Amino acid sequence: MRPSFFLAPFLAIFCALVLIPQLSQAADLPDGFAKAVTGGGNASVVHPATLQELKNALCAAYEKNGNCIDDTPRVIALDHAFDFRGSVVSNGSAQVTETGCMANACPQGGGQWAINGANGFCQSKLPATVTYDRAGLQRLKIGSNKTLLGVGTHAGIQGMGLFIGGGTHNVIVRNLTLSDINSRTVWGGDGLTLDDTDGVWIDHDTFARIGRQMIVTGWGSATHVTISNNEFDGRTLYSATCDGHHYWVWLFLGHHDTLTLARNYVHDTSGRAPHAGGMGNAEIRAQLVNNVFANLSYQGAIMSRTATSHLLVEGNYFEDVSHPLFNDTRQPGTAFALFAPVSQAANAACQTALGRPCGVNQQHLSGDDYRPQDAAALEAFSPYRDNLITPQPADVVLTQVPRNAGAGHLQYGSF
Image 1 (cartoon, rainbow, N blue to C red):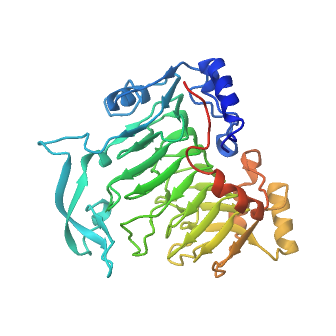
Image 2: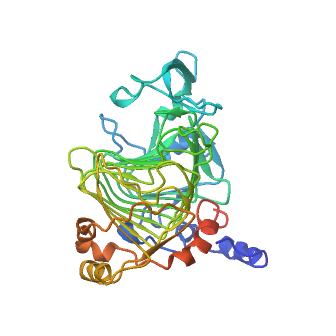
């Protein structure tokens, strides 16, 4: 929460007097699966001024295969938006124009184009000429023991996503706006990729105007991850569902993913919040707790799509959501979500598996077509009780989460 006008001058004086390493830590700590994450800790603060300096600060050493092997503790502070659009030039051009397709041609315009991505995405779609920025297909790799931190209300990264993976561990990303990655183009880049990584806290960030996934886990594991207090703003001029809503929100595909999604504000989207479940029986456990989903169309919000994808859905509020939980009968997964009225049997099942009652979800002007209470999903979390967040009542969440989520709410003073 932002400091009041009356307190702001006194906080500024206090921040100027304390040591810089103290400023690298927020007043709060991660909870959920990432509760042990420390990032760069109290390491010296780095202030990159150029795009190359930012790249070097995030990762200063690579293996031959391109994986980042920089594990030096570092706090990287950004005080403005770093814009990578147009920064990658090949053959004299920062943009590529080639044959792709329309992901969906909207009758009134405003559809989304696509590069011909994985599995021949464009094979059955209308061919079209597609132009996109080269930078969006590259990613900023972050090494182990790093904190990437926005200072103030205008810090962010535009035009290029983040990659945390290849064995990287212990990373924090906070108070940044990650945006404007080929927003008109599917397969034009993701906001954040987690692939073969352990211990990641993504907190108080804003994701907006991104062509494909806002957050995706790759085939490798993404363990001890907490995604908290973020805003996922789906408003877009290029909508695959022809309603001004972004479709590709969260995609969880990894083997042995363990994820906490807490107190996030997801709005104006149309699906995949998340789509959970990958190939090869990838095992996923994700607790979705105290999030607010608002104005979600088409497939709505939460979708578990494989038998080894387990979602525990507690204390969330759904406001004008077509399907709070989407039942994909082609590839059904497992989920446990309570809505009132709650039966004695459901309460007993939660008490047995978790040692406490499950948080009840609430809704307003939302669909009520699917209410899964899969025993397999509930039992999957029994060994992880210490990593679960005890939910607050959903009606309390509705008043707090939208005004506190996203970038610009953490005040660190001046580094």
